Image 1 (cartoon, rainbow, N blue to C red):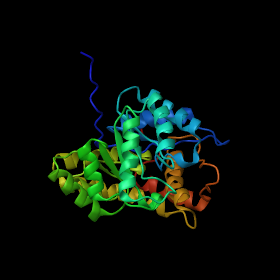
Image 2 (cartoon, helix red, strand yellow):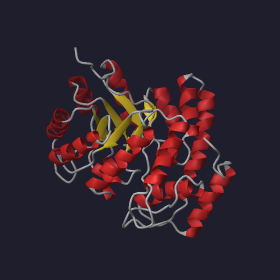
Image 3 (cartoon, rainbow, N blue to C red):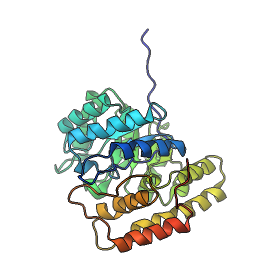
Amino acid sequence: MPTVTPAPVFSGVVPPVATPLLLDGTVDHASLERLVDRLIAEGVSGLFALGSTGETAYLTDDQRVEVLGTISRAAAGRVPIIAGAIELTAPRIIEVARRLVAAGAQAVVTTAPLYTLNSAAEVADHFRAIAAAIEVPLWAYDVPVRVHSKLGVDLLIGLGREGVIQGVKDSSGDDVSFRRLVAANAAAGHPLQLLTGHEVVVDAMALAGADGVVPGLANVEAAGYVRLWDAATLGDWETARSEQERVNRLFDIVFQPQGLSGDATGVGAFKAAMHARGLIDHPRMADTVQSLDPVAVERIVGILDELGLLPVASA
């Protein structure tokens, strides 16, 4: 009989890997390899490639494949990789997803359709079409701030029961909806793995029943999130809360830039901190995204120093 490969499990800390860039805007593969090694050394249990933190919307299809290939080679099978196939509609997503699977992705995550105006029934068919066309598990990415539509609890549970999607990466910021999704998932027999992207309330989401977290801040330091999740898994909520408060102070780096776009502020702060710690060679943002000013960078460095994160310690 042929060997059946079990579906990868994504739980615990699964950071969305940032995409380091060289000064000319091309992918900095050497820094990316070091970053992956660092994340794994700090104890993460999976990697989310080509998400918002990875600036995937600014990359060409060929660059996305290059990035995924480097992440896959650097990970070398130590942790599973889920890759974002973020495109307008199902046919385009399928093309990208197949290339990413060939480059090493063990699961694919995507959003509801972009730009188009669809009903809930059409969104469900969108996910069904993608799942039927790829050979790895499909995840739903709920990020209404970017997609401008919210994936409903009934829709997600229905797709989970059908076996269309394996899990949900929830970046809605809607904690009431996520709590309802956790409860509905439990009542349905847990057909879905549920990851929260709300990185400043991970302790609360773990207590509510989340399976894991996808924290962009883990690119700056993953070890704190790993300690937080390990404590929550053991039911040590005092330690979990303490680690969460420490992480939240580090998260203050995203509030230092002023007057910039959401992409420039969030990912820009992460990259400035990563560069200050020596984790990547350049803090360059994708083309058309503004860089942080020296004052913001100085404030970010001050927060890192306050938390004892300078210089970077060996993993």
